Length: 142
Image (cartoon, rainbow, N blue to C red):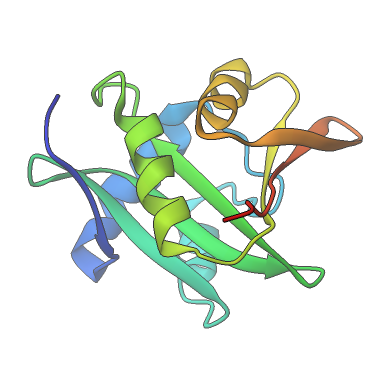
């Protein structure tokens, strides 16, 4: 498997990140944008943590964490040409960075690959919200 890492999103990463979002097929109910200007505006919000997904020194996606109605929620989009296990590794890295539990993720009901990746990490379905499914990574007892 190639080396996967998360790092701060730089201005020169935005083209690759925007392309990955549109190519990934992931639906982000909490972060909708139809064009580059709306994507750029979204990535300039101060209340969201943005991270570039890097595979072997190439930006292949974007991950984000934000507060939604008082809960911490994560999003990610990985380009389809990234390594097949990249989404799972990114989710592992992101959940390690975001220590708050419970941690939520919301995906379109039709986004089957995302459902599988979330389940592999331990997320469970929390509720249905129209055409979206909200998942939760519950707190663990240590």
